Amino acid sequence: MISISACMIAKDEQELLPQCLDSIKGFVDEIILVDTGSTDDTVKIAESYGAKVYHHPWQNDFSLHRNQSIQYSTGDWIMIIDCDEQVVSQIDRDEFHGRLSKLPDQVAGLIVNVVEQRDEAETTPWLGARFFRRSSGIHYKGAVHNKSVFQGGCAGSDIKFYHYGYSLSPDKMKAKRQRTTALLMGRLSNNDKDHTALYYLTQMMIGERRYKEAEEYGLRFFACVPVHPEEWQFYGVMYFYMAWATLHLEDGTKAMAWAKKGLDYYPDDPDLNYVMARIGYQAKIDDILSIHGRKYLDILPVVRSRLALDSTKFANEVNTDQWFNRTIYTANHAAEQDVLKFMEGLN
Image 1: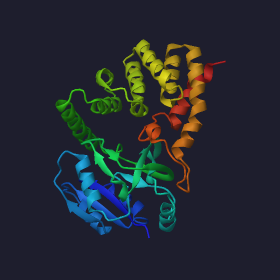
Image 2: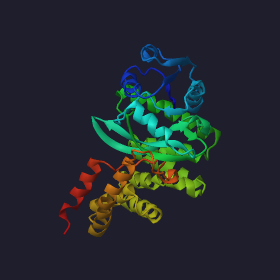
Image 3: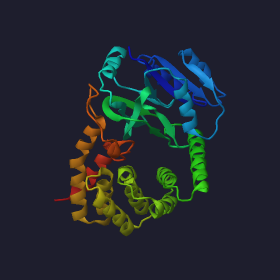
Image 4: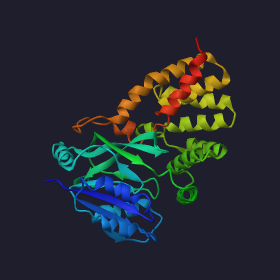
């Protein structure tokens, strides 16, 4: 019989931890939680769900502590989940184990759909590998925004995670941003050409609407990023970030140039077509609005279908170079309504 270990790291997560544990207790065989110094009821709550809790002082390295949780686990499959997440798929324990048992040996991981949940609405979705065979050698690299490393391919699944990490109180969000920024700046102090750190700093500044700083980090990113095709599907969103930042800095010419350059590489990218439609609308250039607005609306159902995966047998292979952890910012109802509004006046 296949066994599954849920592996988690935590510090002061008493608010969101219960809904996370409620969502996974029905189909995992053990819960491993590495606590990095909680002063609230996190440990008590975890133990009330039967979790095995191990204590390690925080060392400014998410991968270090995530790898510790994996090392303590005993399951044939490892499930990675954060305390601010919740599994929402309708699947029972026996069915889930049955699906895993039928996977071919070369499939070492499962991709799930992770969706931001804010104000009881689904917003930004992305795909990420969250289930791994122990035999794949699964481990994580990177002090912040850590990356999974394992041997073997991935299959899709119809499993969905909700992520509530950006729905915290203002004080907790501020502390979270400060912690992440400090870790990323630490990486840059060691290597000022760390393009991955520059990527995430650009992303953070966009999220905080600090568009001038986003542009500055983005320019540094493009000045030093290596040309590796397998990475560009991941980093391609930088063209969207740069177009978005410069558009909000009221430089429509720069914004259009960044969006056009990105579209040369990724003509079917929903985010880039969305931002180009917005540029056309704001600049009153009907041809640009029409072309990219219609393209976005044509692409949207395809993107939503791919994000949903919809594989009840865990059978469909996923091109992780293209979709692994690639956030799609505009695959939501609000963005769709924006484009429809923009296009109302077109003939």
